[in-house]
Length: 348
Image (tube, rainbow, N blue to C red; front, side, top):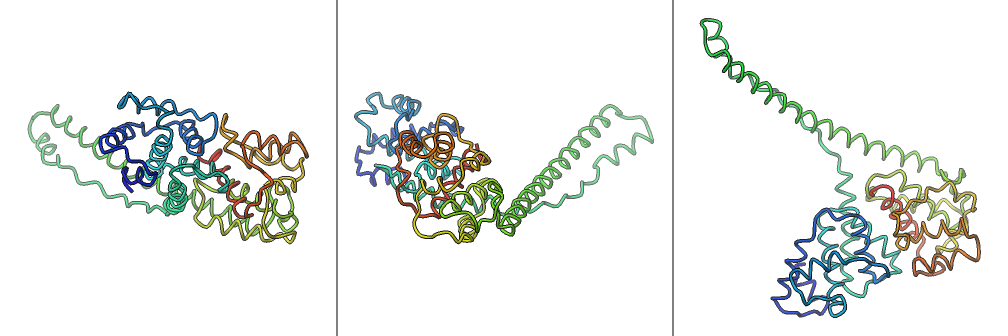
């Protein structure tokens, strides 16, 4: 999908000249965006308050002095989606997870450019496959024989340019050492990644085999529904690298189904209140400072632990704008918890 197609999907027809200006502006967006900038783009995309996108507006105004967040509000939503999609296509895992976490299990829907959500979901799968593809350690090639043998032998027979030959020997030695170091670094890097993937697989397999909650110190069979899905998502995320393996939803489902205490649809409120407040203190609650509104699961756990029954739901609703009593699929709840953990701890 090209730049003009994204405008067409939004029903915008500003003309080729304006589209050219906008495309030029978006291409000037820095590749090394800071995490707060990406998260603020997500806020704006989902029409959340406190979204600071002034830096992007400044770039657009440089190319078109008439651009305004007021008169070009709908267009700005599409432009923000374009910036996010460029980063997703560029393989930036943080951006991919940010969009998916901010969507909050589908409870938040954008007013424009809904195609970005589908792109992010597919990119998550693609990036999971790419980051878990075992690297192949390259063979270390034998260094070539010295090309200075004849010049060195000639020095032993009669006097010659000792200084010049010594300089050539030194340069050749440095070149060979550099080539060897480069090959060794490539091999060690591949082996290190293989070891990391193996460690991740080992940790997950022991967790699946043990079938017990690391946070609650009891079998998942004794954890009530739908708290089991929430805990499985958090615990599995702690064992994973990057975005986790592509089989993450299947493993989460398998572990959560060990519980014999309930089935059906779920709600974040019942999932949170099914966990003892004392037990929540064992759960590592980490979020990116200043963006609590995007982390609905972590916000709910924190507010419940500090506020208790009857208070925390209103606090979460005020902070996130979401109803924690709304029905959700239990699997979606577990995946949301998983993604939030990976976004806040694993990637940031």
